[in-house]
Length: 500
Image (tube, helix red, strand yellow):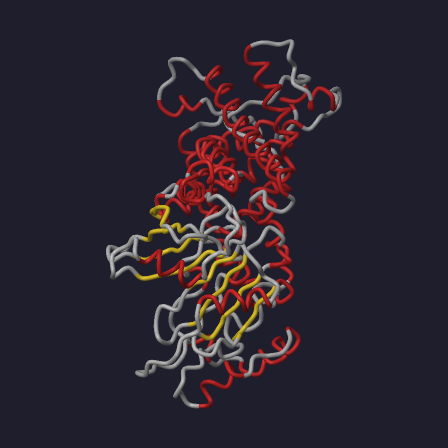
C-alpha cells in the first residue's frame, strides 16, 4: 500500500477499533518518507525493464548494423580497429560478445582521465560507428538513479531505507484496507467511480494497493539483496552458512592463478590441470581452505568493469598470477570466444581483458535464465580454464536470489515479464500520487509547525498491538539501518505531537 493517505470510507466501527489510528499513523509516516523515492523507483524501474528495446532506438547508428553475407571479421581485428578511435594510451577493459547479425561489436576502454568509453565497430567491414561514455549512457544513468539517486553511497543507503519503509507501508496498508464486518471484498477491490473528490481518490488508492500488495512485496524483497549495506551483509551471512556464493569464494577454495611461463611449477599446476567436472571442483575446493583466496589482495567481481554480475559471485576475488619479467605468448581474444562456444555459451556475455601480467581473462555470462549463468576464469597465457562457476555451484539462497533478480528486472520470461514489472512499478507510482492528492485535500489550510503534516491523531488509550510491535522490533533487528530510523520517527512523533 502506499503513501500519505487516510483509509477509504468504511463503516464507522473502523475508526473505533483499537489500534486502527495507530496503524494509520505509521502508514502515514511510511508514505511521507517513501512517496518521492517511490516515484523515482517507479519511473526508473519501468524504463530499465525495457532496456533491450529502448537502447537500439536511442543509439541506432552505433548499436545497429545491416546484416551482410560476408563473414564477420575476427574479434581481435575488431578490437584493433576500436583502438584507433581513441588516444594511444587508452586501455582496453572488456569486450561484449553478441552473435546477433544486426548488432555491432562493442569494446570498452579506460581513458587517461578516468572515464570509460564504449567503441562500436561494424563486425563486417571494421568501420568504427561511434563511441559512448559508459557512465553517461542513458540506461546507466537510469540504473544509478534507481539504485542510488546519483548520490553515491548516501543515495544508496537512502534507497535501502525507502525499500525497508515500503515493507511497513505495505503491511499497515493491508491491515487498514482489509474488509471487516459490514464491508465486502468487492468494495475493497474495485474503485468507486461514481464518487468524486476525496472519496474517489481513497477508493482508487485502496483498490490499487490491494491488487499490488503481493507484487510490491516481491519487488522489495527481490531488490534488497542488491543494496549496498544490508545486501552485502546478507550475502556474507548466506555465504558463511554455505547458502550463498560458491564454495571457496570466502575464505578458501582453489588457487586461481594464471600459468605464467617460467613461473615455479607449483604456482602453475592449478592452471595446467583444471578440474574435469563440477563435482571434482566442489570436492577439491575444500582441500585448500584458508590459502590463496582469503588473503589474496585486489578486486572482487563486483569491482570489475562489467555492466552486471550475478549476485552469487559478486564477492568472489579476482584471481592473480605470479609476476614475471618475460614477454610470454598471450592467449588471443578469439581463442577465448572459441572456448566459450565449446563450453556452450555463444553470445550475450562480456570478457574482461587481463590488465596486468598476472591477470586472467574473466568471462561473465548473466542471461535471463539463471540456470545458465556462468563466470569463467581463463589463463591469459595457456588458455587453461582455471574455474568455471555455474548456477549449480551456488548455495540455496543465491539460487533463489538469482531467480528473484531475473524476475525483478523483467528478464525471465520475455515481454510478458517486462509488462508485469512495468504494471507493478507504475502502480506503485500511482499509489504515491493518489496518496499525495488525499493528503493535499485534507491538510489544514492554515496550520503551522508540526500540524502542517496533518498526521492522523493519536488514540486516547494506547492500544496493545503486541503483534505489530513485535513485527517492528524484528524488522529493526533484521534491517539495523531501518531500526535506527524507526526509533528516530517514534521519538519525533512523541516530541512534536501531544497526545489527543
